[in-house]
Length: 285
Ligand SMILES: *[C@@H]1O[C@H](CO)[C@@H](O)[C@H](O)[C@H]1NC(C)=O
Ligand SMILES: *[C@@H]1O[C@H](CO)[C@@H](O)[C@H](O)[C@H]1NC(C)=O
Ligand SMILES: *[C@@H]1O[C@H](CO)[C@@H](O)[C@H](O)[C@H]1NC(C)=O
Ligand SMILES: *[C@@H]1O[C@H](CO)[C@@H](O)[C@H](O)[C@H]1NC(C)=O
Ligand SMILES: *[C@@H]1O[C@H](CO)[C@@H](O)[C@H](O)[C@H]1NC(C)=O
Image (tube, rainbow, N blue to C red; front, top):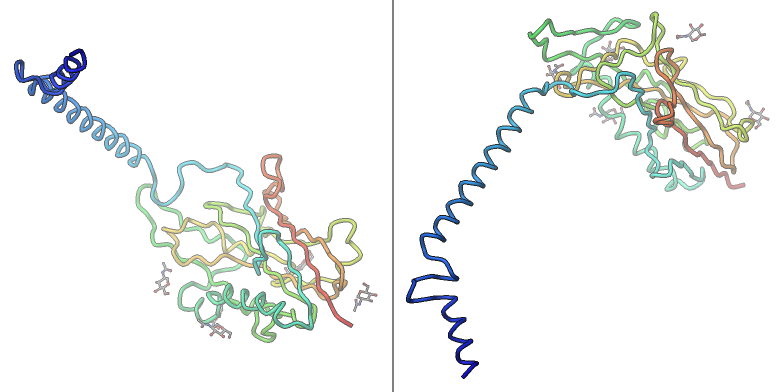
């Protein structure tokens, strides 16, 4: 008997025909709850949209709102070794260096002189290429300067399509990451790259040659105004060719940017403005 009573109590809780209540509430009570949540969520969605709208109004579509004042650009090398930044190959094994040459081919393709001629302007060297907006009037789209692949001479892939890898004199290409508005150098002195061996390897690195001469990034490639404002921007490059590096040994190399207004490796980011990698060229006798 007791069981039957419990059962019917449950049944009444779910649907009580006397009071016409479902789960203890009448239809109009349920309706009000439902209405409340509908209104509540519409209100939340509206608040979210309004906040986003106000936030987006404050953003400039051409450049980031927040940017480090003294941004030191990172440096990267090509061919992109794996994450470990190692370039290791054996001269006699074509398949061990062919991928490096191919990576450089792909990387340098947009720098072909003909492509640069189509896309970009021949600028006046050794001075910044300024194209400022005047107040709210945007000076867009902004033009960019030609960086011809042929400037890299022996590392351009034109006269030596394997970039020296096949004879144990490899080329490495260095670029600075883009920083909007960066004006490197000072008093008309362009920033330049220097590479050296880590201390214990200093007698193994041998002679280096830089292209363009002295490893400079010409001032005309700065400032950079951002992807949207300056669509055809070609980052300037510096190539380093290792002419007499010791074979069959690891050589740890570090390249850095020298510019009197770019602090190198601050405490916050010790890789800023420099890049390290290992080069090992095996030559079988
Ligand atoms: C770029 O130049 C290289 C070497 O001359 C050539 O093989 C390649 O086809 C060129 N690419 C384009 C897109 O012009
Ligand atoms: C780049 O190459 C093109 C085509 O050969 C040439 O017309 C142009 O003057 C070169 N630009 C620079 C900056 O050397
Ligand atoms: C970008 O390059 C294209 C050709 O590839 C050219 O038609 C266009 O005018 C260039 N735009 C700017 C802003 O330099
Ligand atoms: C390279 O640097 C040396 C010494 O600083 C200077 O005399 C020479 O003019 C520079 N060459 C170029 C092409 O900038
Ligand atoms: C290459 O380096 C070796 C030492 O590692 C040295 O004995 C030799 O003279 C160098 N050759 C040239 C051409 O500099």
